[in-house]
Image 1 (cartoon, rainbow, N blue to C red):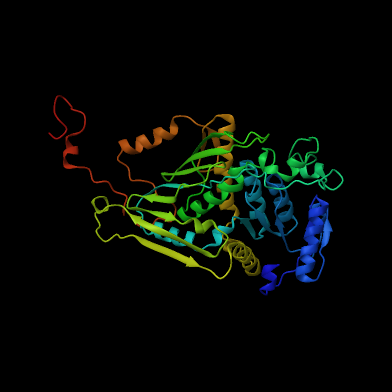
Image 2: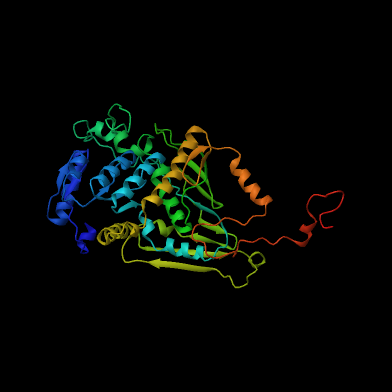
Length: 432
């Protein structure tokens, strides 16, 4: 509605929801904003059957995202799908295949990716500003007296008469098991594994996507996670404290750590390199059109460069990030260029892979390896073996895709006495 007021040539012609109260509220809002009431649907497939609908927005519980997206693309619709793009890693491949085959424009709803700061950081990283990138860290801590997602109000109006609960579950589609009607299951679905992953899918996807966009990283090579339910004992299934360690084939580690029951003095959002780091301001995740990040150099004894000084880089846009992200999607549709979007399915799939495998690691007690082609296997010694082999061979470090800075910040300078190291052969020292 906001973009329509700004002159975008769009009409909101249909609303679909399994809850009649929400459906009616949406109709009332759209009519009050546009003067025209949209058609209502109880089943999204009936909406997709309309030939005059060009694009759809999917904002359902996570477990429906993949199926609705695939069906919409098959029906020839452009798609805006809220994050996470899918509920499982396996579904990311199905969505990617459907998207490529369709030729349609698809945007994943991590709105902050439409801020220019991520591309600014990426260009500087590729030019060697940080030297060899080795790690990013991020968080999304919160706190509240109700517990995460319990702030979503459940009401007496929520009944089996007003909510098609079986359709919400997706029983017929095999998306979730059948279960008794429960207002909390419907209204606070993020607390339960069949429908969402709590902080992993609701919050971590936002942070991880931004870091991937800034660094150029995509699929991780190794993922492990820890945490638990340490305070919110209210019947929920998802963790209230969770940490992820994701190691990438490019020789970069990603750290995500948060709690939903303590949020003061949060971790910094950092991208670390051998010559310095970027400190991403938290404004880059807020619902504004502003964002900035700082460059903090390492000491000159390390960088061998006295010219590196602290700097701040910022960018501002006319729109808030929600409007900006939708606007980007609409521009890509108008241009017929799927690659124009700021959060395409490839980036969406990478973020889901990291957080979903982290959930599985936490729940199954496993470490997961992912090949460059996306094959998933249980962890073994091969990850450590790989890096130890590179060290023995004194190999050059790996870099993120797009790196164009040669050896900048990617070379170590051993002391002269290191020449004395090495095995003695036939009783002779290595320097002989």
